[in-house]
Image (cartoon, rainbow, N blue to C red; front, side, top):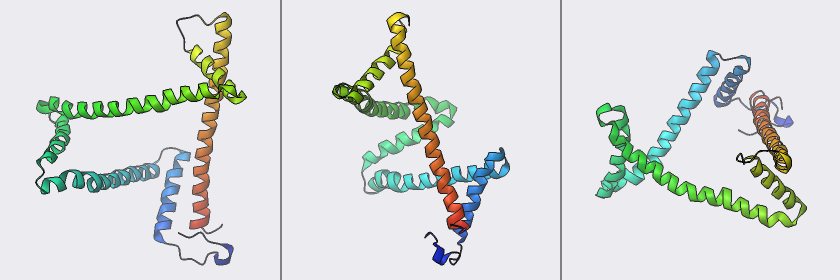
Length: 209
């Protein structure tokens, strides 16, 4: 919906979709005064709509083009994912429950096989390379000292005393800075969401902005 301006302040007709969205937004914020039926209704409505939307998207983008359409063309290989997917529901039938472990094992194994090398490359090797290559600058040197001191903190086979104690103390300082920055980033992101909702309520709904 277009944002109102001082020139057309209050001139646009308020749609029922905007009013419904505003009321549901207020219903969610009623949690600020404690758990209540209005908040629970809005929460469950959001969860239900999200699940319903995801189900429709999955059926249209995955189930029909990847399983139903090939099967309709006579491709018998489409029976494999259909049978494996159906076998997952055998967990709800006690006598056949062990058979549901086969598709679960395939899904977990394939997911781990695809995710572990990618995560190792992106989060370990790339971070190590960036830490070492940036050590020629002052910022890179500080990062390298922080990484080494933090890793030293997690060496529990050696007593944290003497030189090791000083290094682990530096590692704790770096971790405290990281946790503080992460917490501040989380707060700022939540504040940005709150500002967006307030702008919607005061501007698009009440047309005070």
